[in-house]
Length: 227
Image (cartoon, rainbow, N blue to C red):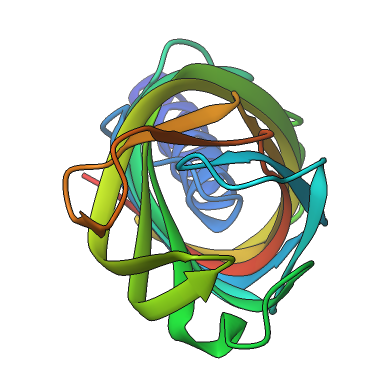
């Protein structure tokens, strides 16, 4: 009789453990802390200013960028249930709407290729919705591309790039589809340093071009996979 009682207690205990495990899985607890993340969305860049253009007379000429696209990917590690660290690579592409003093800005585009180290703070809870915030810093390769873009007496035909610092802050909400997969939406605020381009592929120019840094607001769909 005592043996049956012990077996019954053991069975109840095992059932409780399994139930707790199922709840954890429903809440999205994966067995590994390593994850990969990808995002794709719109990039809205604020107006900036052209402070120098290969010897042309410019005086902080306004540069307006069209709404562009942002693509990024990251590999991260959850140090705890509420804190993670990750490395991120991305591409932000905008065509230029207008440049003060020029009439052919349609032939000009601007590309950012950031590489960053991020810290992420999330709020673990018993639902499938997990909010998070984070910040990161690193560098960005910034490329200007022109197809016979002319300002004054200087024409840009080709591309030129420069490496600057960059930083970002972000936040979002993700839905835990399974212990391994989640999908959600994220907002990112990013800033680059001032950009300087040499006249390697500029017709009739021997100096440099300088533009103030770019501030970009991005809204993206995000997918995360935990191993």
